[in-house]
Length: 165
Image (cartoon, rainbow, N blue to C red; front, side, top):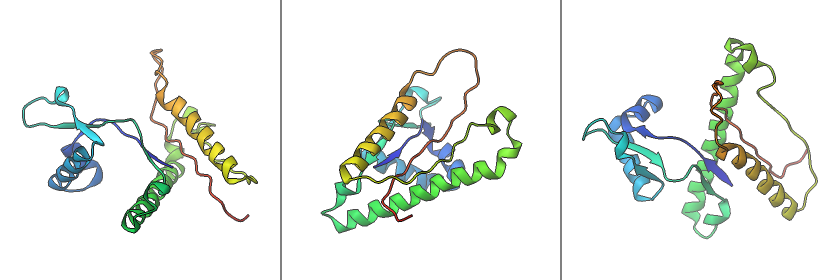
């Protein structure tokens, strides 16, 4: 299962973030809107030309089995999964390379790297995936307390795959 998240943005902001041309980003935003994955947010626009977009859902999830009867769709799903893994690792590498510049509170104990070998049946592996997803969903959907404390985005991800030790 793969999950994507994000917030509202304009094509210009996304262009600056990604380094892609505004026209290219605008085209892809329209494609995502046509697919029902994002929607326009007109109340955020400062004028008639500015267009803001946001995800329809806070997450997009798919499993490879959703595409197993269409070889082209399987190839796209596999490529998307590889890109997401690269993106996940880029977040971790960036943290590791820059953590010495972080405040001590953020450096000490706020990141986690843990691993273990489990011996599971396919049903148990699915149960583990469901429990991990439920845990992350609970944290992602919790109301953020209005207690005056600074909060930063924290990227959390988990992967459990059959492998040989």
